[in-house]
Amino acid sequence: MEMIKVDNLHKTFKLKLKTIKALNGMSFDVKRGEILGFLGPNGAGKSTTIKIIMDLVRADSGTAFINSLKSTNPDSRLRVGFMPENPQYYDTITGMDLLKFAASMFSVKDAGKKAHKLLDEFELTEFADVKLRKYSKGMIQRIGFAAALIHDPDILILDEPMGGLDPVGRMIFKNKMKELNKSGVTIFFSSHIIPDIEDICSRVLIVKQGKTIKQFDRVDIQYLTTYGFNIILRKEDEKNLNLNENEISKGLYSIKCKKDELIEKIEAIENSSAKIVDIEPLKKSLEDIFIEILND
Image 1: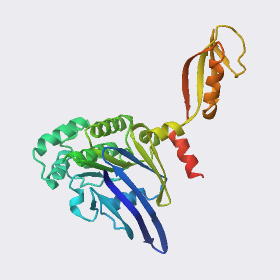
Image 2 (image 1 turned 180 degrees about the vertical axis):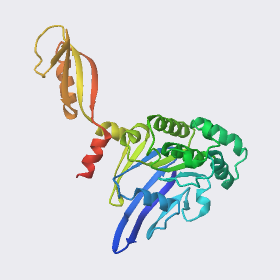
Image 3 (image 1 turned 60 degrees about the horizontal axis):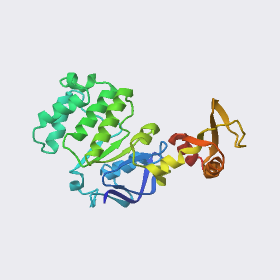
Image 4 (image 1 turned 180 degrees about the horizontal axis):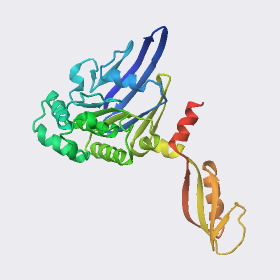
């Protein structure tokens, strides 16, 4: 089932004497129970798309749906938790005040209890009564994420949620996102931090110039990031197999091959007296794939 559907969105902004085409037929869907990463360079249309889904900006044409309701219908967002790219809050309120305010918008029962639990999970308990003006960038990100979760949403829409976080903060975010997803929450988020997308997403969309140009699931990512294999084998004798094997220790040899050579190498080894001990994939990063796609 599609929890979010974006259908042929177009959006143009006029800035002074310039016209900027932000979206040029953006289309995709987010399926129930998945973590979908939204990946693209600056200016690709990621934030504009998210703002249209959240009805913060209206499209020139095309439609966005949440739970089969048009995104222009306020009821579509009742079960959505949202975190913008740069959360802006009144800096005279405290972290606890913010969570209670967010809870009040959704008529959350036991708001105080839930707020304390979230503050603890995001390691902000000692800052509960501290005004937001004294929060660091990473702390603002954490309290913003907590505010998006206070009403136990079914869908999370996060715009660059891990920007400005230190490694500990990123680990907290990723672990929480995985935990939520296991409980059935659908997550859609944009990010520039490619290793984080590679680590937690079940599917990745790559966007460029206002439209989707590629999408990959976990199997695709594993295949595309594998450029070859390292075959470890054991030989009883020192007879050369003519497979460019390199001795790595007594009796153990390594053979590196391209993806399309693997079957041929395995068959050659099996027709000899050598035995395969292990086959290790040789990997490149999703970031390398991303750059290759953008440069096509």
